Image 1 (cartoon, rainbow, N blue to C red):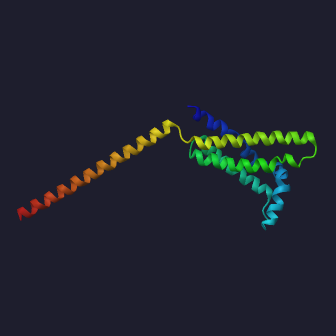
Image 2 (cartoon, one colour):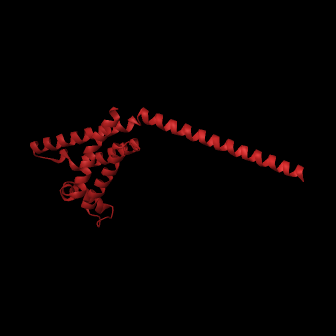
Image 3 (cartoon, one colour):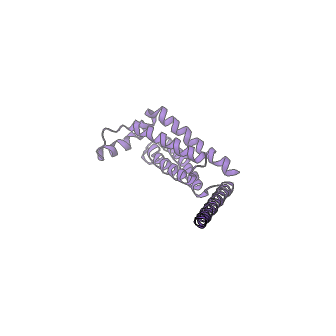
Length: 173
């Protein structure tokens, strides 16, 4: 029961952030540009715009957060979000570069908030599926096994009947 509530609540921040990144990438791109643009140049990707990377990051966040919220591959989704959030945290809030003490404290606070979200999704990645989901999956597997066994038995019966009909036909001839 708690997982059914906790996952969407945790995912909500990532969906919100992803939507904001996609709709308004300029502000976020300006924040990470001093770190990202030199790296892009070093990799020979001068044509790639930081705003486009921010948009792609937003789309990935929305997709992974939706998967987490809906409990579709929750472990994979949570690990993906942890990776995205970790990169975002380091690039968006480099408190260690701030010289103004007040600004450094603000950035440190934001850094730690984001880091706590990384911790949350890492915890979510260890949680797996709920017991109800596991029970439903087992029941579905058992039903499929029964259906396959019944089909196999029916096929065996049909073969036996065909064989018997063939024997009768030979005897009659």
